[in-house]
Length: 312
Length: 310
Image 1: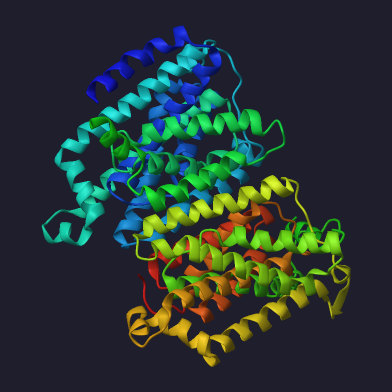
Image 2 (image 1 turned 60 degrees about the vertical axis):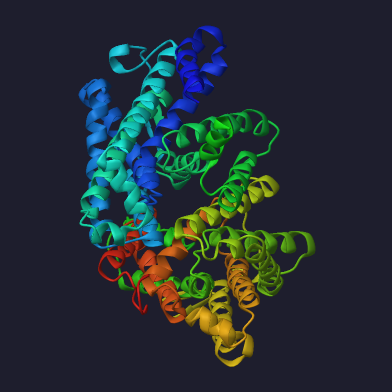
């Protein structure tokens, strides 16, 4: 297992020199969605608080970073942290309301959805940031503006994001913090009875998760160069994030990454081949079927099963 | 400005140079909201019935409604059946769909954690929505009905006949559903299983059959609602997500599991959005219902008519 992980770690930085540009793009997307899934994993997987509104954090990070760069000339290298911080402010607000008022299960899901939808509606109606038409960034190719002629730059940034978040989660998992989060997911009442300040740890998980997702938003803005409220704040994006972590194995270090390696190529292949032949939505049918199959037959996700098979 | 938009939405030419919101316009919005609300209520009644019995939130609710709409559209375009007659068949078809979804999928996770149930239903929603996309394409459709063109004038405000019929039928179906739940044996078993599953098992109720029947009836409600609203609302497969979220709003505001709450909540949300479209602007109308939802979640999570929060 460790050897395989080491091999992958050596292979990934070398990959762009060996493979074609299409594979580089594909891997960039895998890393990016793996990163987003990992960020969600902290609060949705480890702490077991099912947020279906993570698109809100991505959207805020993306818009903040893009608007600051275009209107105020602030470099995205700093702007991404501003975007992350703003996303964390929203995360803190949602977390405070949800956890303080004791919303669980479906009620918490709906609270997160409601805030993401409110963000989407507001962004669609503020003309200064392009309204429903969207906000566009002119490509200059200036690295100081987080813009690169060479697609491999995005590849390495996405790889660093994914590995960084995964390293952080792996480290946290071994700390008291990670153990508390898993304990909250398994039995919150028992945790409280043992004197764990569950509110505090859920809040910290939410803040960290939303901050990381906001930084992901900055990457999205300067990778795609156009932001539409319906796509960056929409529920489908939140589902894209959740499904990677769940299929791979929520609450495990490698789960979201494995999930992204399974699902992102599927989505890309479908976009290229099915869409051309007029098969709209075919990959989402497969997503749905996979989600159903995972819940019924593999509720722990693909990674734990995979790990057991490899260990044998 | 707001008046111009409101009039345009109501299908009337916008008078030039008027900026104030007059009483007629507000009355018109109120009326339209209430009439549209009947369908919202029927949709939410279906959701709350499923939740009340199984404690499972049907995340595919709006997508089932869109399937009701497409069935009405197929019947209207292929066989010339008016949706105001065809809704019966749509309800029957959706009953079968709901029954099967319950028997094949939901039955296996009735006792699983909420998160797992939500994810499973999300999977069902993705499959239903995108199968519709694959079969019918992304272009918005609207079902033509002979009744959709005519209007009645009630003094200064007008009544859309199609809306009136949709409201009337939706209200009648809701009434029929409550009679079914309170006056028939199967209905009583459904309520018994909702109140106390274990107790119902003890007295020999076939709870599995009751669950499947309840899921079927809930889906039939939304199938009928879809057919009834199909001449009024242009729809495409992604409409399902909006309708799901709208029905979640309604049942939370009314109180999860409460039939009366779902009915009143449907009217309330439709009127609030209709007024929001007049006082703010049409693209902001959903903001009103989401703000209402957040307030209810925080201060009265059991909803207006709910007995308890789970």
